[in-house]
Image 1 (cartoon, rainbow, N blue to C red):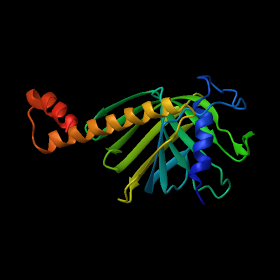
Image 2: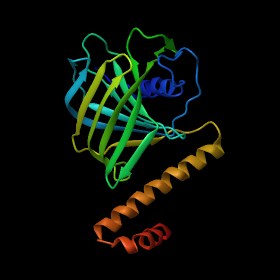
Image 3: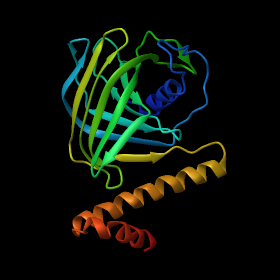
Length: 221
């Protein structure tokens, strides 16, 4: 299946803007609310949707200015070339190179969904689950991603992704307001700089009592 990340991005953006309901009204046109997009290539040893096995070769990550993040998985489904699932949540934490996302909804896209601007719009279903990513975007290296969730209808979703080692693609999505776009770009750049400085502190064995001063000096360099 040929993957169009541009089409996926538009579809996911529409889905992430939907209200937090069991099944939202997906036909209402929404303003895009994404400030970062990353894609990772590799393989999926495990992909299951309602006990049915699938195959995947890539995973995408989306982040919104409001803090909502999502992992999107295009499925190599011989019966549906538009079959895409997304694990989404607005609560996450990072510890060194481990990023964990609490999943509170699933976005489900298929060829039978209603369309906006010619693209199928995903349905949105409440869910409980979690995602774990090993690696970070600052170094453009992510070794693995794993997600598991059960939606409000009792359907289970699971995947395990392993990177093929190639650098991930990270892109900033420009906002309509140039000033807002500039603020978002600076905030993301500052976050990446902080991650790099924390990694440098780890590599140099900086003691916890000296860590804050080290990171501040690193950011000033």
